[in-house]
Length: 59
Image (cartoon, rainbow, N blue to C red; front, side, top):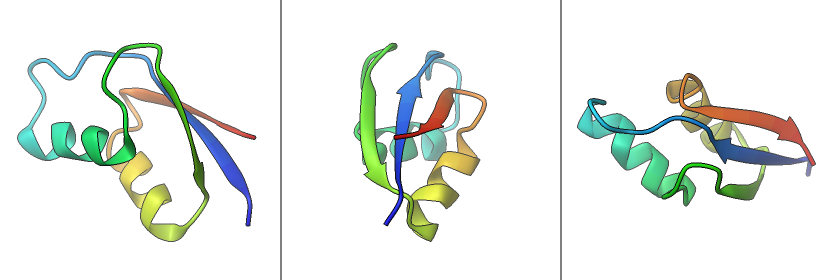
């Protein structure tokens, strides 16, 4: 399975509770933090919901 690296680049202040929960579920807490996930459909769906707050690249 392909891997992706997700990096938090913007703050979650003034965002909806749903977006904050998605960032937490992805394991992102601080700006600049990078996590690696398998590129499953559920992970890609979560990334799509917060794509304005994160950057994504293939690992």
